[in-house]
Length: 71
Image (cartoon, rainbow, N blue to C red; front, side):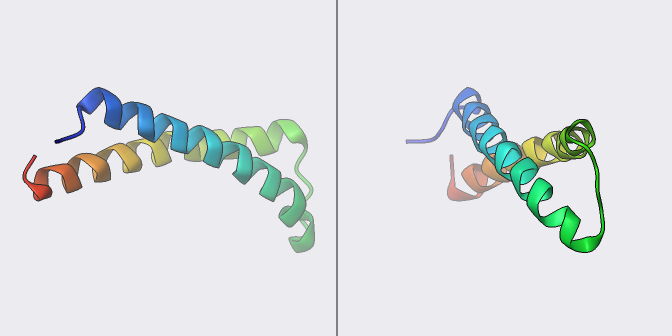
């Protein structure tokens, strides 16, 4: 059975939301190790820039793999 486009999108969104929270938390811990001191608002903005890219990447890869599998 193939995954619908809607379910592919929902999976990608869930993956990105969890990844976003983890990325922001990681940035808050790791950036200071490299001398970077962004505030919370900046960390959220940096993470947000990557959310759109990550969402598109996840969705596109899911659809490509589904197509290659024969769905």
